[in-house]
Each structure stands twice: as C-alpha cells, then as structure tokens.
Length: 332
Image (cartoon, rainbow, N blue to C red; front, side, top):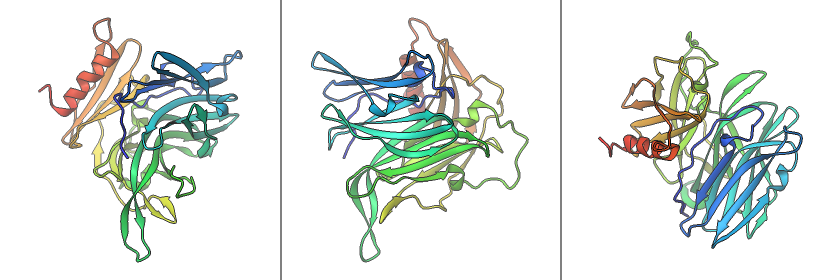
C-alpha cells in the first residue's frame, strides 16, 4: 500500500480546552485533486466543539460532522488516506469531563465508520503526531517472521496527568485480519534515561514536542521525544510485530540527541517537525500568527533558535518550504 498525498501535514500543539483555532485544523490533497479539510467548530455554549469535514472534488463541496464529535470537546484532528480501501482516516482528541479519549474513525463512501478508542484516561494531551505504515512483521507457524500487508496506525503525543507528564506512543492495526486493539507505552521505555534528573526546567513547551517521522523500513516509524527530567531528546525506531495481536517490543533503545543550551525562548504556538532523509537533520518548528520559529539539530549539534516574521510575501507555507529545503540541504 502506498500513500498518495501531495500535502505534508505538520503536528500542531493546542490548549487543554482544544480552542477552535488553527491548531485544530488539518487538510490533505489526493493525487486526483480531491481536497479534504477538517476543523473544530464551537457549539453555541462557546466551550464544546465538533469536528466538521469538508470535501472539495470535481467542483462540488460537501460537509460532514463526525458523529462522535457531536458532544464534548474535540480537537487536534489529523487526516490520512488509505488508497487500497479508499478510506479517509481521522485521528483526534475527544474530552468529556476529566476523561480524554484518543479516537480514530474512517470515512468511506461518504459515510463515517464507528470511532475506535486508541487510548482513554484522565489527562491533558497535546502535540499529537500520527503516521501510518502499510506492512507489519507477522509471526509464522514455524516461528519465523515475514512481511505482511497491513494498515497500521501509529500515534504519539504528550500528556500531563496527576502522576506527572511525558511522551506516549500507541500502535493499532486497522486491517480486518486483527482486532483493533491498541498497545500503549510511555516513549521513555525506548530511551536510556539518566539515573538522576538534571536541573532542567520541566515546564518548557519545547520539551513537550513529540513527532513521528518515517522510519528506516516500510514497517517502522521513528519517534522523536524528550525526557522532561533531563531536557534531553531521543530518537527511537519503533517496529511493531504481529503475534496474535499487533504490539511493540520493549527493549529497543534509541540514540540520545541531547538538547539545546537555551530553553528560555517562546514555544507557545503550533509545533511541527521536519527531518532529512538520512535522519541527520531535525528541524523543530513553532508557528504563531506573527512568526515561524525553529531550532535545528544537525549531526549531533544543536543550533540556537531562529525566527522569521510572517508577511504577505512570507507565509507559513513559504517558510515551511524553505525549512524543508534546508533540512535536505538543497538550498546550501
């Protein structure tokens, strides 16, 4: 299976209330020119929000509300499309009272499939990042493993609860062969954490940045996340396997990336992550209405925060395009 998209989606941060701003929108364009966009729309009470999907194709525009978003507060929608089944998938946050649910639903033939719960607990989530892979290592009867075509959902986010805060990861199959059960772990399980916490601030928004990017093989993703005790970032390759159910194997440790020396800069906007194909360059981005800021990690070295003001000539799209070129080295 392959993803036929022309639009690169960034992971956006949001407030705990999931305010209906640019953080609660997403869009993608298919190869045939079909445009899907989704955004959180507030109810009359000014607090609750629903998610409205807009489809533009062949000169026609239609809208549809995700049924499970007709109550509570909904935000952080992320879109992806499976060409094999012609299904649009939406992953989003849903909150009722103190409970925060991470949900996924498919949209096929202009109808919504029942939403599936990926994770549910009384926490505040932010910085949702989603990736899909199209194959998984499956255990055969003789105990060996082989690549099997499958639609696998990967999701990562930052969460804050009564017991602390940190980055989390979930993997869930969306193919009929397996029951859609999620396997959820703290991303700290995949990092060699220091024995002692360093004297680093734990409440800085930059340290809450979480991203999933393409992995080294078609059945894997790479997670980029921090340990909020030490202020260090890590990169780990996550490759799920199917042994009766799809799950992730604990014990694989990713490399330590360290962290920037300066942690006092403003990082309160929408976050995103751009990586080079060889994985040696990572650009962490932050977008507000006035500017785009970024911090670059390249070949083991962290660079100071940079920023560019937005204008009629410098838009978010042009700024991100320039940063993508910088990540690949095509503008050097």
